[in-house]
Amino acid sequence: MSEPALFLGPNEGRRALNAVFKFTESDTGAKLAIIESVIAPGLLVPPHQHGREDEYVFVIEGVIGVRVGESEITAPQGSYVAMPRQIPHALWNTNVDPARIQMIIVPGGFEHYFAELEAILKDSALEDIEGARQELATRYEQPFVEEWIPELKAKYHLLLPGESS
Image 1 (spheres, one colour):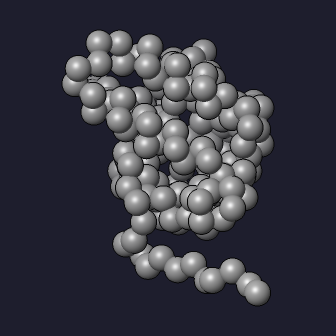
Image 2: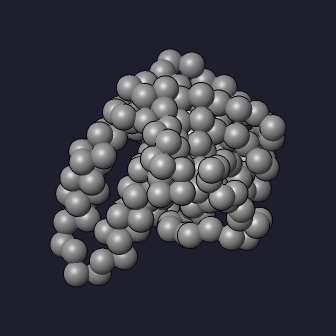
């Protein structure tokens, strides 16, 4: 007997931060997760690498900049980008319009990181947000690549989430 079909319409899915979870590990037997996200104009997604997951990005709308290892590219609408585990990567948007991407993360489970990060950021009683964010990154084997941040911010005139110009 086959599994029942899964269907989500364009505006359906569970939301956390700027992400919409289309399919999670519980939907796919932990095989993968599919997440849609918006990258705002001028935003640098903090450079990082995954210890356990491969990440594939499809650019649904707009144009994003991508660095994977030492390679940098501009990925217009319709592009696919592979970001293998253990290889540092970063995404950004230098355009005036938001970019919308679809992330396929293999295996599933990393989607829980977004929900946990949202809880940390919303916890007004939390005294050490940065420490909690670092602990979360360690638990999910997702170290940040801090040394890339100054270069990418200066080169493309970007801000990290939560920063203002």
